[in-house]
Length: 248
Image 1: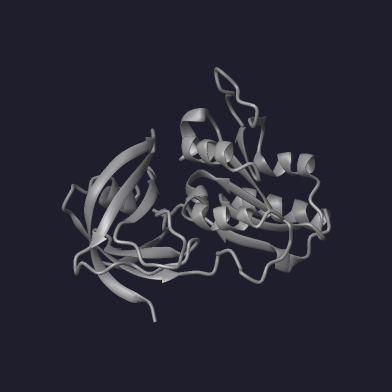
Image 2: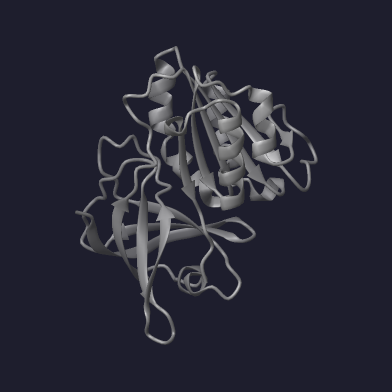
């Protein structure tokens, strides 16, 4: 049974022009036990009093073996959005109502395929940030490879991009490709790719004997990548999906 608890804002900063990173702690002082890849729900009311909720993946870096004190999420600004009004203007010390964790978009211990293909757009990259310690353990086995394809329009919208770049530099089995669909970096990096993530898949040559795929973010990307991976022969159980839908 998922817990229900109040969270107070400890700190925040802008990740991108329209994305805010928020850091919370539980009001009761208890840590949060979660598996990287899971999400929380934030509960609030519309102006007319009707109840509603929004889901946000936990961005806190953790290995899943011990609870965390700080609960981090990334929130995209939606013009006129009720959640944007709540979370975009929340001051330090401000309190929200949350529940969780929920979800099964997690790395599975029973998986034995040698390569993981992680695809994301926008704030859909947050679960993969949380998974970094688990990915590090996978790579330490010496027989695994992890490729992160992260799609954004511009360099400024590659959330946590420098963290993934740094991780790739210190972990040879981890490849990070920033897929920029609108504007290349002023100084391109070796891992950069042009276009949408689903269109970069062919370069990787997905194969059912080798790959487990995770898709998270914009529904159009998730659907297109899912179709492409099936064309490459990956069976549906080897393709895990989490769609992020903007709500007002």
